[in-house]
Image: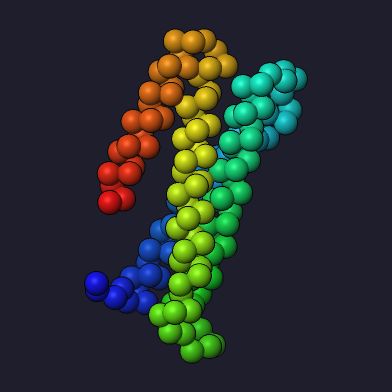
Length: 138
């Protein structure tokens, strides 16, 4: 297996931070919408729970990838070896994947608040999106 350079990890962390910040912000906006909403239904509570999970996972990703970014940037005050990058990488990748799953769950459930037909549509789109993302990650 080819070892990835610090420069590669630096660029990857930078891109992941940007993506996670945007998706986390979107998830937080959905949470804010539900907090001011007057209606309390089971499906809306489930969407808010999924949105909260997504926002939390994306925030974890931002902070773990920021640590990775700092450690792989020239001028970092401590000596860094490949093993030092292992924990932030693992936490960041797992949190990012769970964030995407939570976000897709939220999107899939959104249609059920309107109608059965819209629920089937959004669930189908969510599943297809997950499958396509999975294909792109392998």
